[in-house]
Length: 235
Image (cartoon, rainbow, N blue to C red; front, side, top):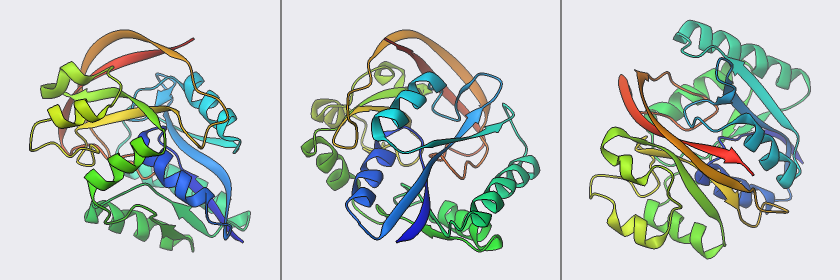
């Protein structure tokens, strides 16, 4: 069995990738690894409260490993912190790191280069699969996910549960899985969970910031990113 970590963002792509990995008896997932904004105690980029993340991991049944980062780390800080944790995993005999990426070539190269520095290898269960095919599979498997944040022009979908109707309503230039950083999600039900994660909708706030590369979670758009965040409150 191949010892792995799974880079868990809490969103739908992570959930679908994990589902496929759990069907593979050759993969032994030791940890769900999530980067956390230490200043806000929320998932990096997604803005989801850590309490909801902990509930996800408990429902999935895999130990959660949190990597705490400053609110807006520079690349030197980011790479240093991530390398320290990767080296700890490698010392435990973990050889592979799993991601839910689909088609961002530059990000995959970045991940693979950082992993190679510590003697680890990346696994990409969803790589090069069609976005429409993936979102349809997500629905068919009975997953549920809510949009935790969306770029400025998509304010109206922040806080909405993703449905086939919502997907059809998206502008033509928006990837239906949000792979280009258009939106980020929180998965609250599906076949990987022993029970659904209950939440309620809180306030929406707008934030603009310079988005770093995030080697554990979904990638945001480069440069200044304006996002509407919908606070998801644990029930």
